[in-house]
Structures are given as structure tokens and as C-alpha cells.
Image (tube, rainbow, N blue to C red):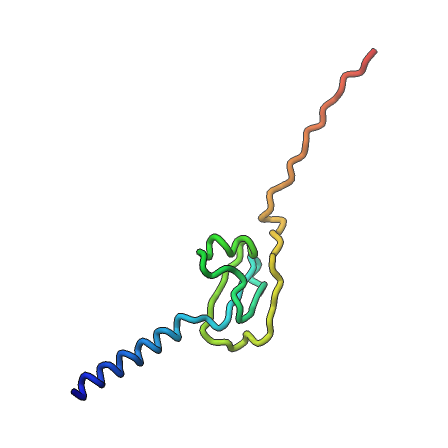
Length: 104
């Protein structure tokens, strides 16, 4: 009987430890230039969707990191949405000049 109680207690303790690891306490988004663009305890995107669908909308070329610890997350940084840099933007399309024939 004591073995069963010990096993149940150990199982509950393991489940509790694993459940705590699933929660992130700090979200950090790095821009394409590797500078911090966002840091807070609230996620900057909808976490019910895939990150590859939502993160490029607010931080094109960015990377998001989750941290289970809230250390360093006390000061909130929010520079979102990021603008795309000139190197990642497509060059503007210029219309070709056309010469008009002169009327005589």
C-alpha cells in the first residue's frame, strides 16, 4: 500500500513540474538586425496559431524566443511592427519613359 501512495505522489509531482515548463514567462522578439524589437510577459502574436504564420506579420525576418523565467523581462520593449529594411524590400518598379513623336 505505501508503494502505491509513493508512486501516485511521484506521478503528481512529475506532472506538476512538466506543466510549469509549458508556460513561458517572457517573450523576446529579435529583428532581422538581431536587436530586441519586443520584450514582455505577454506574447506579441496569437499563440493559438503557428508562429510561421503570425510572426512575419509583426516582425518580418524576426525571431521569437520564449523564456520560462521572467528575469530581464521587467522592462517592456515594444518596437513592433517592424519596417522591412531597404535590403529586404523589393526595388520600386520604374516606368520606362517613352518618346512621343513630334508632329510636323
